[in-house]
Image 1 (tube, rainbow, N blue to C red):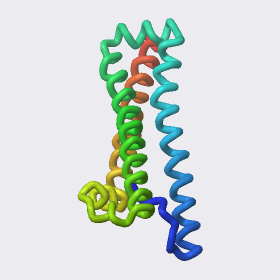
Image 2 (cartoon, rainbow, N blue to C red):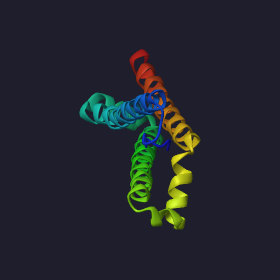
Image 3 (cartoon, rainbow, N blue to C red):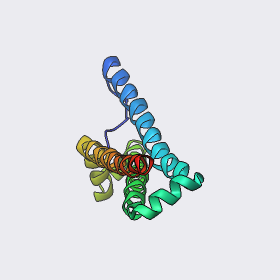
Length: 142
């Protein structure tokens, strides 16, 4: 939830903030695309769907993909709200005295929240992908 507020930053810090913002957006896009795209691929292929359904692992695979996407969507919504509150505090200085602003300001500086939730999403996608690979490769061998 690192802040993207570049007002008052040095040129170097502003450039780093912009780079962080771009990389964060790209990563979130990739995570959501993978979390939706992989299950869509499985659902669109009858044979793959059939093998996964018969394996008994389909519920856990689905939950892992859905949870990863849900984490990213919730994180994006929280970041959006936090950045709005920080922006509003810059526009209306009296708002900076509210608990909402102070919470938003604190959250905007908590990089670990984004990092940990991204790792959880990637871990869930990795486990789900591995489960698919194991199931599908064993059905080809059998």
